[in-house]
Length: 365
Image (cartoon, rainbow, N blue to C red; front, side):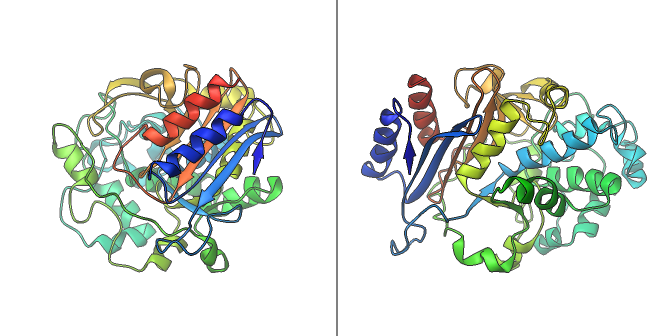
């Protein structure tokens, strides 16, 4: 573990979460430039309390994966292979069905496409069939007029972003993540986990309550509240192997924080300053149709301007994930930060544990 001088209160706050019974196993990392300021981990990686949660433990990060997908798309835009303002159908012609021909890449990435989930009954195991899901999305009529509001796409986002990427680049997002970022930079980040890594994955303890979605509408129901709204009917091993760039990334907090620190300083090996600014520019803001929050969306990333979940800086951006994980970059301070855990809470965003650690960390600056 690492605690830079002056950041001792973060360790105290981290230990307090365990003392209060809020954690099973967790890791919190804070990086500036190439310097690790904080890297704390502790507790247990298994529900039985036998295996330590240590530096080698990998954690499922759920929707924090979307930040990785957003960066991969942003790299295509920065290299001139794609534009945020071109239509999705220009690279994926089948997507133009059912009145979706005018939807742009940036609208799709900022949850404005009206495809938050499938309203009609289907087998939940179909989520493991990439081409089948992409065909269903291409044929589907939007649940609201595209471009008029954001409505969070918890799972479908990954297929839309991933298929756009595949049509342009030729690779899956999981393959590109490893080849272009994770392997060259020595980062433990995966979308689609190799079997050899399975023993390192922390066991999850699910929330004991359901999230509060506020007023339920058709978009929320399709996104979260049907038996087929998320992948099912297959094994945990199948889930880990699958490449779903919205939901099933695996990572360490340190690697996430290191990637975010490179974004914070606009490291060209990850994304140029112009590329970062294009990705993080606000596309839409206001009350989300699916999440019970006011949101500010960039091209695939949550902007801190409305939520305040990622510390005090309004220019901070990143993503949070089901159960409590989060990762963000703060260009004002040059910080990259990440929190992962295996005791999940029902908070849809702004997990109280992460917010406590983040607040204390900023107080140490």
